[in-house]
Length: 414
Image (cartoon, rainbow, N blue to C red; front, side):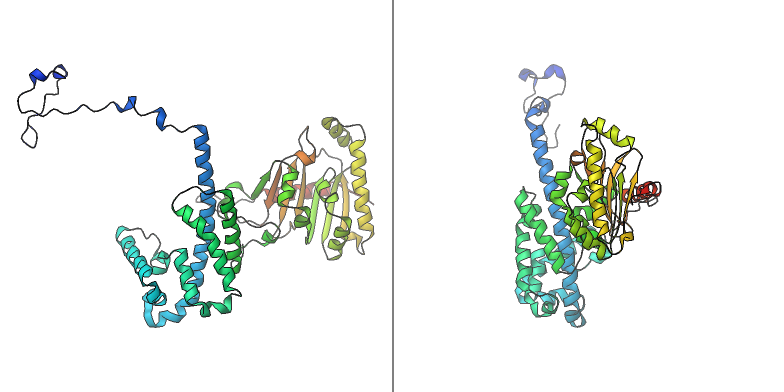
């Protein structure tokens, strides 16, 4: 009998479909549909669909990180400026007081969400147990606009702040609703976020950011890849992002090792090198000896005419000698050659300090330096120490030590 007093049909397989054996008043139950025969291929995603979904997630993830940084920074700025004005009178309700009648609706909504989060245990950090933590980016902006005279001493141009926040609004709306974000809007959001963070006085925190800007994603999850900040399939693509002028300009120390050091010699003028050295930079250049057997082996690997690579390296060395001869202190511009098998080329900029940057390429048997993959390393980057693991230095230090080892075994060029 069912709970409603109706008799259910027997479950015996022998009675299935036999209406003559069903007692009067019984209720027939429909057999469950065999879903396995109906669910399958139509719910599968193709490789193209998965690729599209991953692309969407990658773009949304990058935008979210930027937006999160901006929101946290703006929240801190609003608290620093407005709390001293309202807290001594209104206590913990200073945000409600600062919102005033114009913001009564959204601030009360934030108060309600905070209370719900408290009851359900969503507040994992006591520092977030305040109304300010529940305000959105537009609401934080509204507080700034309403109280601009309080913020004016800290910022030069209110319009610039508002324009940057306007540019973020499309990306914020798309990310919050998990919709597709195109490349143009993502690029706009990243530019606006970087500009806004600069306006709000939160630098990247990495000295070498002036040479190669710190990407928000690198800043938060870059420790997964040691101190590698970018990878390029060849040197052409590297120079689109990091031209030689940006890499070497303003350096106080430059150590380079390789066969011919073409990235420096052919892309950074001798005149600029002279000015760099005269400004106090220390330069050490390590070329492969153009008369060594290693040069001949490399020529055979690349399939070029005998003596061609040796002459090219010799021309680069002669050019650097001319640069050195124009300096008042030639000792600050050292040129050496080594005879070992070349394993990599590396340009270490300011490698003795926390703001170092390095460009490293391994030599491939059939590829010239212009065609070899490139790693860009950031020196001085603190690694994340995980539980049970010791902190270890990254690749930058490894290549720096390798340079010093080769330099100690090399010979000076007169």
